[in-house]
Image (cartoon, one colour):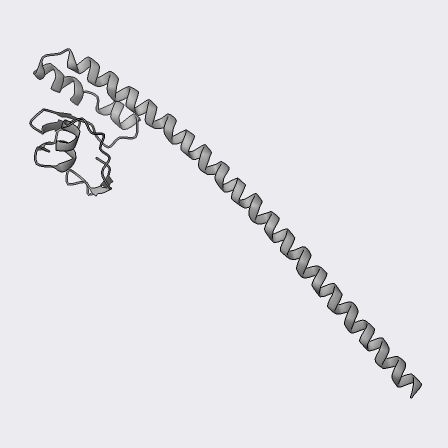
Length: 151
């Protein structure tokens, strides 16, 4: 009987030790998970900040390039202006643009790859002519290949 009692006490003690170990493991695991979540959140935020900075630099560069082309074209008679802008095809492609266009005040345009059309009835054109900065949703290009483009 004494052996059985000792055995029961031993088993109970082993059970208590296992329960304590499981609680410690759960607590430590939770702390590790919380720390990893914080580190992951900080890393993701850092990547987002870096991407935002890089995109800002690219946009600033492209904006400068377009202002420079517009500035040069603005000093020319219209027929020379069209030829100048359409002659920028290689530059447009080097900058990652599919094409650039010379757009008249009425919305008619000529692109660097020779397409002609009219934006006069488009909301983005009317808004931009009112001085608003407009970036449209992604559209399917109706000129040439049906790529996705931003206007």
